Image 1 (tube, rainbow, N blue to C red):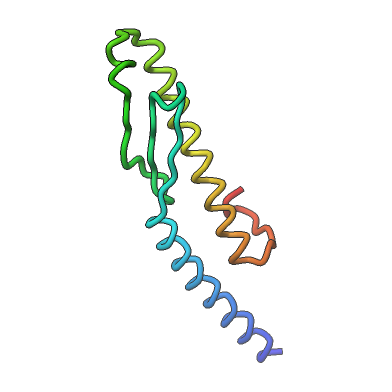
Image 2: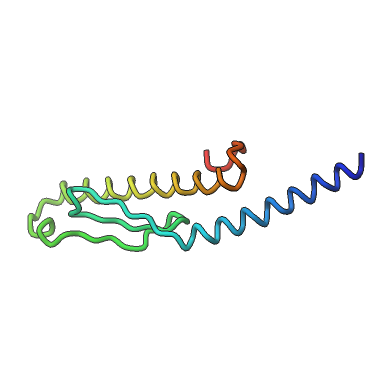
Length: 105
């Protein structure tokens, strides 16, 4: 019985190490999303940190605040969705497809 517990703790420790490695790898990856036919582009890393926002000069010259705000919000929401998908993909590789409650729902 105790041998089984030791194996379980060893597996949990290995999983924790692999998760830390995965998070480190995710931080180095970048995801981009755009709206308005590419007029607004947002780049984020795998930690869901926004790294860059590009707004096309033509959109700025339009002087339409509402359109600009909508396009920026849409691009940010899309990049967040892509980061979540990336994280889920990496987690699936790590766990072999087993869903772990509370991790990347």
